[in-house]
Length: 306
Image 1 (tube, rainbow, N blue to C red):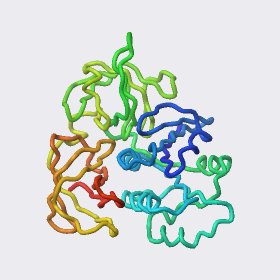
Image 2 (image 1 turned 135 degrees about the vertical axis):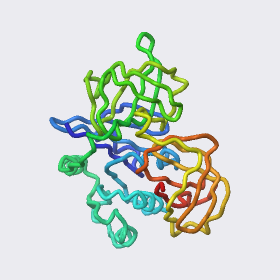
Image 3 (image 1 turned 180 degrees about the horizontal axis):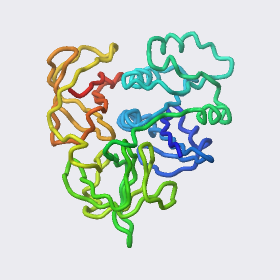
């Protein structure tokens, strides 16, 4: 069964029309299951930049409301383009003049998005045509988005299978802490399963660690699958609308982790970042650099790990 993760931006009520609420924090998740597909819809509360950057790093597909043309919409377009999201929908008002919008998405990955009015039936019909392939044969990696303790059951993580297939009784490492865990059980949509493949959103009951060890963005995988470092060199693509890039204290989002960094500029196309403590990442993940103190534009640019 195909599973698709969809980010919704600038419309906090659309997910309620598309699915059933599952998890709520600074990001809110809804699910919808059809005969042969499971959709996870996720949006950042109040369009906050940290959860928005994390959502952008985890989705397969984006729904962007352009019913109002705002600076925040412009930044969202730039961020989605920086991680090359090519599949999506742009929602417009009926009979809206799209001239300005078309100029905004011209020469970006969003130029391939479908533009349509805010019609739930039409949106779902389009979503059901999507077929996004995931690597189910690679070594398994699961990214944690939420975790909690259940009396009589133990530690539970909610997360996404980035790659491979996680199986009941798997022994995996909690990265970056390098602690071994055992997968006791797996659930998808509240149903017990023996395995979950890439693209799935899962609930895992695990043993070997305590809930205080479990942080958003941590990975469950084999040691060789993920990398752990406090210094990361990046090929860098600067946001063309951000002012001059300077060394200093900023933040980075890698996967579902957002942490403070010290940025060392080498050139406009090459930078080095240092975190306060080692962080875990997969080699192909995008690295968003954020200026949380900026008054307007927070997204400084996006890097690829060298």
